[in-house]
Length: 319
Image (cartoon, rainbow, N blue to C red; front, side, top):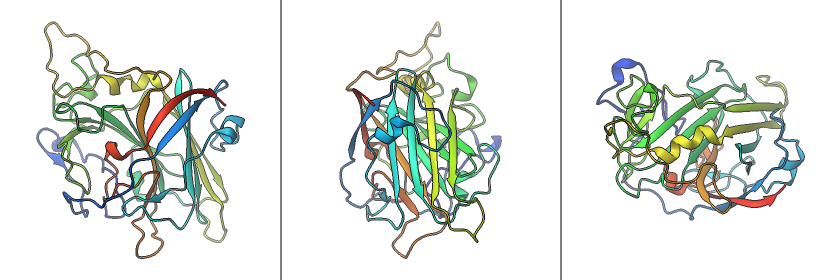
């Protein structure tokens, strides 16, 4: 990946598995980061009628949902040239995420699933449980990354702290074992995180994921001025149960038994998870623009800092 993106690159092939550490080319790693504001807090409201996913975000629940503040520069926290906002809703079956992206020229080129979406303008979603910051017992916690472009093409990875062979339990599918050809050690992007190595599971697809994109304009037509594009995402809670079972210290028991979940999935009203929404732009808007804009600033060119994701509390009030 080039230095035009702050996200994790995908694996190049089975020969990179084993003890190889996946590194991002063109991004210098630092153990320091800028001091930025504390992660914001947000209350996700419950929906009584799930939105129909068409990407337009026109359903009444989205119109009534509280929106995030306008996104800021990922590194500095400074204001950005174009508006980006997000909203989060939930019910007992799904987590719903919407994102509104102002963009005068909407472009996208990549059409193959899990291709290098960061090479296009994209919207990115990170979902972490309450224990995914790499600050608790060594290796605990996991987080999920989704990237999507204006064509609706997606890229996704599941990350677990540490390098256990079976971080999700010995009963997990082969693609969630660290000896799988598409499971690579990962050390972040621009920041040497004190939590250390993670394992990225590039061979795993989140079951039941649904996404939709709407372009308010004409895609890939520079002769027209667009208003932008919007993204709508529905993630089944049943597929996020894997986050509650991640434990890199776990060893395969005898006889094999599933790992016990450490927090409720779906969450109980009042529970808080860490969820980040961001956008990355191929074109930069001035010399101080990092090209990455997010709900919460990270103080460094690295999206993989779950402790800096906004704290999303799941409310009981309905929209």
